[in-house]
Image (tube, rainbow, N blue to C red):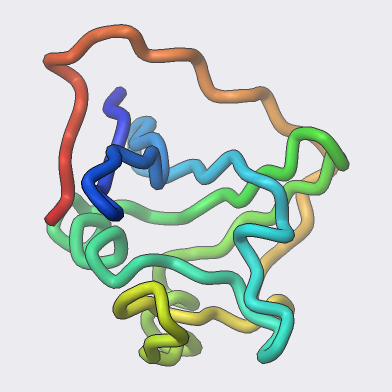
Length: 120
């Protein structure tokens, strides 16, 4: 279990948690989706990390609204498009590439600096 961070304007920002063969992104869909093109947004560095670490899928979890979507790595790679809408290189995966989950168990809080990974 690892917490994945990136740096933005000299601040550390959590961009996901690596749990087993899955990366979980717990954030409001207003931040996870680029509504202009109706796609989930994944930082390119997170996708690269996922490929290097044999991640099988991503889960986007809007805990406040209880919306949960799972997207397989195969869909990220085959249906995702690369672009930059002002927040650095991202991969955009169409909303319909995901599968809605009925339930989701929030990822545990990880308070161990040895399990932090900074993606640059």
